Image 1 (cartoon, rainbow, N blue to C red):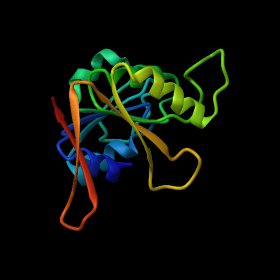
Image 2: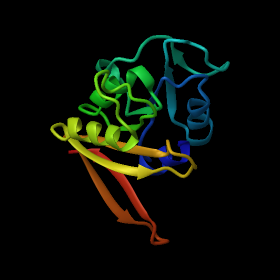
Image 3: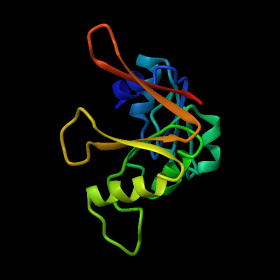
Length: 164
C-alpha cells in the first residue's frame, strides 16, 4: 500500500491512516517516502515513534491532510468515504460497515460506495499488488481535484492529482 500511495500521489506530504492499528503503514510512509502520516485509531496501540491520535476518525478533519487512507477502516468506513468530498481517499473496505440493514459482499460494497460518492467526485477501482480477496481498493477524488494520466519514460502509466 505504501508504494501505491507514493507512486499514485507523489505530491502528498501528509496523510491520515484511519483505523491504522499499530501504524506499520504510517511508519513505512514516513521512513521510505517522507510522507508524514498520523494513525487515527480509537484504540491508540501504535508502535513507538509513530504519530497517532487515539480517537475515532471524523470526516471534518480531512482538510488537515493531503490524503486519507482507509485500509480496512471498519466502523470509520462512512467517515473515510465522506472525506473524499474534500480530499483524495484510498479505501479498501474489508467488512460491511456500510449498511446495518443489508448484507453486502465485496463487490456490492464497492458498488454502494461508488454510488454514494458519484455526486461528489470521481472514483476508480484498483487492484492492489498483494494477494487475497481484500486487495480491491477505491481511489475517490473530490470534484475539486483533477486526475491526470500520463506515461513515464518507460511507458508505464502514471497518475497524479491536482486541485482544479
